Length: 165
Image (cartoon, rainbow, N blue to C red; front, side, top):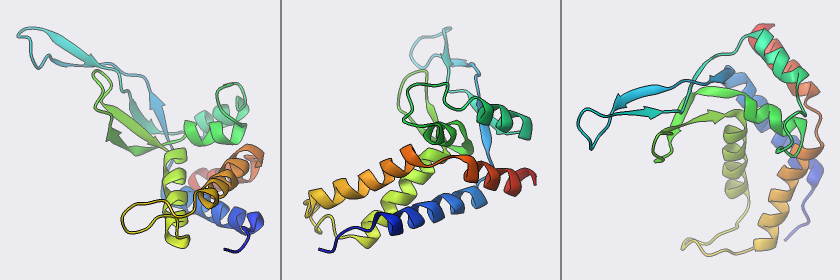
């Protein structure tokens, strides 16, 4: 198997992210509480705390960018940015009182990278057995390295130009 070229993979990763920025307008998550009749107890109300999304304004986006790095649980300001931008789609969580997981740029990015990875590298056989664990680890590390060491500046400019420019 040939050695991975991290620079080539970084270019692919950058293109995947550029495609997401072009296709999906940014939304912001807002906290909401939605009441609904309790499914099992008559005359009882339950609540869903999933929140909602609304189109992101340029001012909100600029505030997010200004505060990047404040949340310590992300590996980098760039990863934080991708988690803070949502799209107008959700997937079910199957968790009581938190039924919707609003999809973020990070979710789309991870899915696009995984699709590319499985399309271009033979990592599993037709029965789902892993063929090259080290290659998959190396590919995943390329993505993590990109997220941890890439400045968000270029992508902030792309988002600004595409959606408010």
